[in-house]
Image (cartoon, rainbow over all chains, first blue to last red; front, side, top):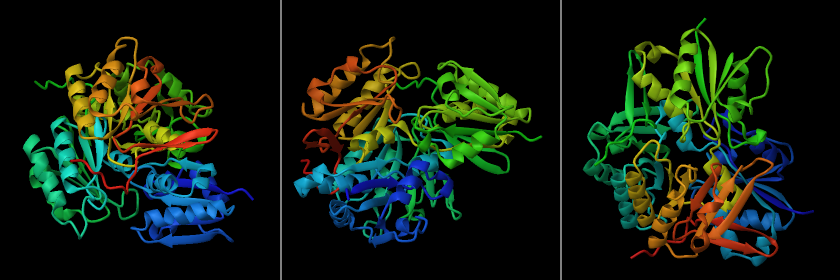
Length: 254
Length: 254
């Protein structure tokens, strides 16, 4: 039996945002591997084995998945959102690169998904309508000085920014520092979006201004988005505002 | 009859990457609106009206969609990939912002999709596994000097970069200039990906090194991705290489 490893983005949470490609790959798998809460999102199938592990176990989990694939299993590794964005796809390929050379002969497929970032954007309008970037604030994997440099570069170059891993107990002040960087380059009324559990029944999205952005609103499940100088709010009577970044008004930067 | 406007990302091309949410929204629409080739991807439905227009008509198309919605139609505006990324969602909200105030009372929903960027990434491995940004090289909508500044900022800050609208007949040298910017900050062996028609039957993906990257490989359908200093290639005997950006090796930038 020839094994296969499929790395699958499950989308942000709603079942109707799981692609048919992801659903078929899940149905064909003998083994489902991933962080517990993501494995729990996969519909139960008789005979399929489930291997849940902790959030910080990405490289060990990757090696385990590769070993099972070598043994001829059909392994599905699941991530939330898109598996290529701060998620399992890069971990798997890193494990391949550093690991057993025989792993390079395995069949590995990545099934893209609807990323959290774009799901958040669609829930409030179109804040990522123009040039944007995504930065992880986690300094488990890179020095904080590098992150700060990137925040400065992104703020100065007027990107819309999505911050992943915006808050954690071990680094309570990082998001505050990130907001301080942006306040140097952007006006106080720049829109800031705090979003958690997007597309889930308990979705929570707040749009505030940069001057009022309170870092303590974010927890480990929160994605934070900061507008560019062009990002605009469309206010509506008695309804949630829309946020978008225009494509057609020429910027008149000096 | 109360109208509704749904802005839908159709994904990169393969039917199995269209989400069930997008498929239902398309099925409920009375009118399908969009750039011709995208409208052509929507399955035919008896009684549904189709309104195809040219690529450069985004704002007029948006106004037309909003007018039909005001008249009580169920309008689906379609984009390729994710509708929020250099696509119709921002155009619609810009038309709302600048247009008839009654449009603010309309029901507008954005259905996110699998973006071209993530589909390309998944086809070659996981090049967007760490901090990344997306920049449009089109200077129809912003001055070229702003684009150059962003390219410098992104290159210097060591983002992986996706270039949208990388090539066109009216600006044949922009991609060459972009590569020149990156050559100032990155080594010649930095991976560069040229991808067109990703997930379509005629998908074409080439991975080359920055020193050999020939801008004339790109046409209007090509997405170009340039690795960060960490982006690595896993070579495989007699098979296409994988490209990924590691998450776990700490960067040792000075």
